[in-house]
Image 1: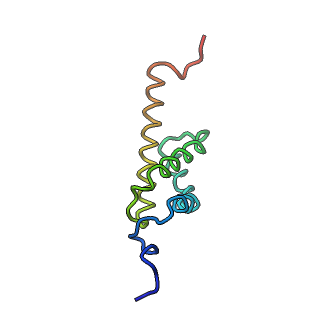
Image 2: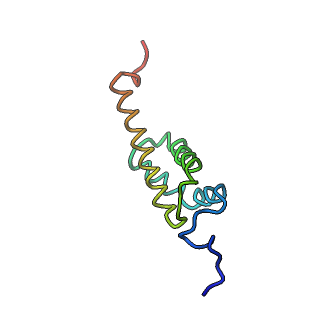
Image 3: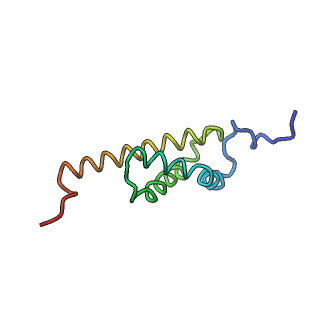
Length: 102
């Protein structure tokens, strides 16, 4: 048996939520940005996109039960944020909010 504590196990919930989000940001921000860019094609908004994903992650970190699922969890949040942005873009186009005001 190894000397690792239960908190070090990938199936354990994060013991320090803030540190878990900071670690996730360092590890997965490029993945979130790449995936968000591929889905939305909003290159000029990618920094805001990544920030929104990690803001949601910060708010929901208490619901993450297994540290080993962090990447999949962030991909899910990324897809949801991208869908929301695409819906807003479509709605703005539909009602004409993207056209210049005359």
